Image (cartoon, rainbow, N blue to C red; front, side, top):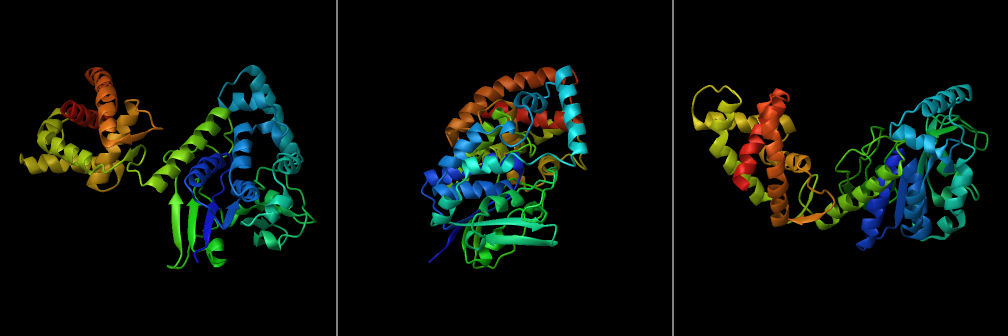
Length: 392
């Protein structure tokens, strides 16, 4: 019988993305035999395991603020994250930086009480769902990959803290040993789950640059849920940022669950017809586009002009022609102000693009006539102007 596993990649505040993704998975009937994570992924994993769901996970992320686990003032944290740098804010953070340097890192005394308020070791252990975390022992100079049954009784929260011991934190010994964030060894423990016999794994990514070991046998199915936009910094915990990451996680997981088309947007249905229509338009107007933006060709054949236009888009988006065209359409849909968090059908997407794209096209014409923008931007804008005119 297949063992289903969930893996949560580390990434600090990006862990809010996990929350949205897990909500969508559970809302659509997914259940797991085990959950593994590193750093914030380990903490989120424990929250999921103790509930066999996402109630505690959502409650934490909806209410998280810096003073829950640091000595920083919440208002000054918000000011810093939102770049509201008043004299008081600059003075406050100047003092904090000096204090952090003097103390050799950010104090961690509030983290264990924070974990105690949100995670019950008893509930985690009594859950039918397994838990695995990754940390790194500086004292022993070796990684620790451990499942809940192997964690000594009463030490669950210490292992979660050890997994999330961000390098900026002041190092403090846990049971006589020093640890650091498990992300230095494996920030997305897919291989660990596979070694334990989990053969159907969903990994929720934060797109961290930390190392991860995802080499598994061909018998193990690994599915990735990836964010469709950048998740920002690991310390970005403003309420606005957190809520957007939760929503993004939900919709990006729905893309995986429902098989929606699109890279940035969510289209319920095949987008091949939209791409083919764009190809036809660009084939028809390639010569005019090239002449308008002074793109030189080897000869005056239609094919040469078409090759130049399609080659330009491929160079911009670094992929094949069809994918480049769709990326181009989504980019200008985004610029035109189409709502991201909406499940479109093909017709609704095109109707919205026609409406908002026509308005945006007028702005582009004004910018173009005033000579604004780089050459690449000018070429892309020109292509869009021809495209939107024809689809309208």
